[in-house]
Every structure is written in structure tokens, then in C-alpha cells.
Length: 238
Ligand SMILES: NC(=O)c1ccc[n+]([C@@H]2O[C@H](COP(=O)([O-])OP(=O)(O)OC[C@H]3O[C@@H](n4cnc5c(N)ncnc54)[C@H](OP(=O)(O)O)[C@@H]3O)[C@@H](O)[C@H]2O)c1
Image (cartoon, rainbow, N blue to C red):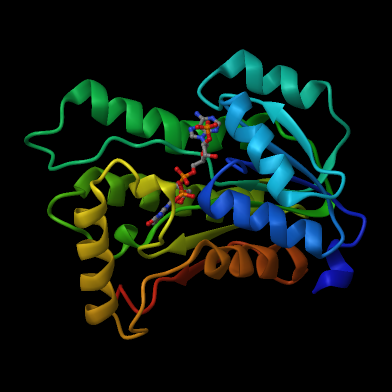
């Protein structure tokens, strides 16, 4: 696997935290030249230090049409692009405000769409989205999140045809212990993780490295395209 990524140019959007950060670390370890992008310079600075090597950082907000266009215009083609960037207000359809609901779609779905529209990717290279298992296993309290994830997975399948021979895939995580959950109190978060560990066939909560592993598998496997790889501890069947 490392051979396929050695000296490749890898861009991880959302690479300053959680799943994206673990992916950037794993790609750098596999010998790739890694660029991480996200909105916050502070988070990027800390992440560059954590990834090490010759990692570069770029401030980029995937909600900004012009900024995404500009970013790719100024860059050489990429071998592999991973989109793990999103911030998604979530809740039941009847109680989540419509502006929050639209903001969630704007961030996670349209953010990935903008990248797909503007990105230059070399032949045989890849684009990988991070969706989520709620696409196939809905939750009554996160209905919209499931719909966004399903849209993203369908986008990946369609783009695998439109952008061929560039390969396009999605990785669909279950519950992963990342800073995404830092808005919860520690007690609530720990209770949620412990509950999941008990309920899941894998008997533990997911770690960002579990998802990074699947992302690198798709990026480095030249026969993988149009796939959604679910890595959820068995969450979809539990
Ligand atoms: N953790 C889970 O349990 C879980 C489960 C299923 C699916 N997922 C999905 O996995 C993806 C990554 O989640 P995570 O847990 O790694 O979350 P995280 O730790 O909060 O990381 C999100 C990353 O996205 C960046 N970001 C957010 N909005 C952005 C924007 N508009 N433009 C550019 N960068 C942006 C953030 O950095 P800045 O703040 O600097 O922009 C950060 O680097 C998300 O799509 C999430 O929905 C997560």
C-alpha cells in the first residue's frame, strides 16, 4: 500500500482534525507529500506540527465557491484528494431550524461538490469523500445527517463515471471518537462511547485511524472506484 502513495501529492481537506488528521498522518507515513486544508489557521498550525515531515497547510473554506476555484487554479494536479471537511448541525426534522439544516447540507454535501467541480486530479488518481453510516441506518434524531450522507455516496458513485479514469469513492464511518463530539460534556460523550462499545459487534468505539486506513486503501487500490466502504464496527447491522 505504501508503494502506491510514495511521492504522491495528497490533499486532505478537513485535515486539521479527527478523521482528516489521522488520514494526513497515515499518508505522510506512507511517503506521500501531504497538504492539509481547513478554515482555521490555528488548527492547521497544530496539525502540521503533529503530522511532521514536509506537510503543507492551506486555509480553505469549502463553503466558499470562489475560494475553492482559486485554490485549485493555483495548484498543480493532485494524485489523491480526501474530503473529510464538514460541520453539520443535526437534529430531528421537526425541531432543527431550516437555516441550520441548510447550513449542514451546504457544508458537507455542497462543500464536497465544489471540490469535485474544481479539483484537478491526475489520471489514475482518486477523490474520496467521508460520508457516514446514517445513510443506511437512519437515526430518528439525525434524519438529515443520513440524507446528506446518502447524497454524498450517490455523488461519489456518479462521479466515478463522469471523472473516469480518476477514481471516486466514499468511506462511511460509524461512531468515531474525534473532536466532532467535543461540544458534548465529557460525561455525556463518555456515556455515548461506552453505550456504543457495548452495542456494537466490534465491542468498541471507532478511532480516526480505523477510517484513515480505509481511505488509504481506496486511494492506493487502482481497481477501487464507485465504492462506498462502510467502517462502522457493525453499527449498520446492530
Ligand atoms: N466522528 C464521527 O463519529 C463521524 C461519524 C460519521 C461520519 N463522520 C464524518 O466524518 C467527517 C470528519 O469528521 P471528524 O469526526 O473528523 O470531525 P472533526 O474532528 O470536527 O474534523 C472536521 C474537519 O473539517 C474541517 N472543516 C469543517 N468545516 C469546514 C469547511 N467549511 N471548510 C474546510 N474545512 C472544514 C475542520 O477544520 P476547521 O474548523 O479548521 O475548518 C476539521 O479539520 C465529517 O464529514 C463527519 O460528518 C464523522
